[in-house]
Length: 278
Image 1 (cartoon, helix red, strand yellow):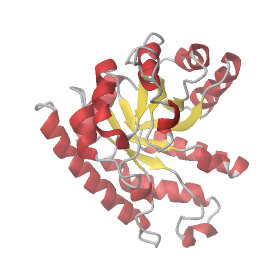
Image 2: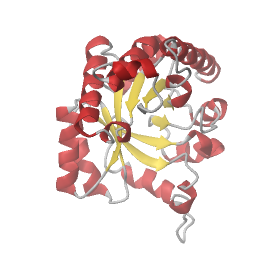
Image 3: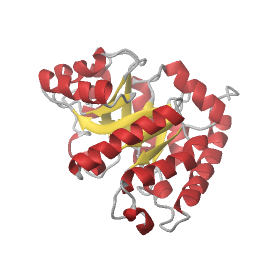
Image 4: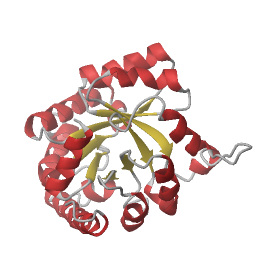
């Protein structure tokens, strides 16, 4: 999927919502546990309920890998279902990979050739040669961790050098020599608020994947005020608030309603900040 195609979907749906499929078998409704593949059954229902209101899905690999082969198969079936039924959806594997070059090449094969997702999250700590193997696939995206939403982000990401450049700023600047905004996005946590202005000074045109709205307390208004550009430039992820809105047999309908409420809020943000492009 190209950057323009993604923006087209945002315009058509008046939404920049990404639904995080952080599927914990201990939290899904009990009646699903009797199915052959409870994780996939849950995901399928959530996808069918929320697809009209979002433009992307983000399975978090930790929730699948924790179940071994069965979990990986549920992940592959989930991706295949989205691609078959909702081919306009952007699929992100939230895997946070990144290792020496030959290992990253294998990770890239896993997600882009075997799983056939559109994008994968990658950690930048090991530098250019750990990221470039993911950039050899036309139409695929690297989403580089830049400024995350967790409390521990302050441990390293705000460390400044002798010139006052913080580590997250160095990641943004240096990585732009590896790929353009047509192939690379950045993870920037919703809890960072006005720091989106600093991110946009360095990366004005890139899409940002924004976790942390909802359960982590990030403000959608602040994210849009400081982070939206003239092509929206945002994919705001919500996981728990949507997928665990209810744990009865009505769970999918509850998820639909939460996604719809976020979509309506996003439509208002687009109208407010995008200067009539929607």
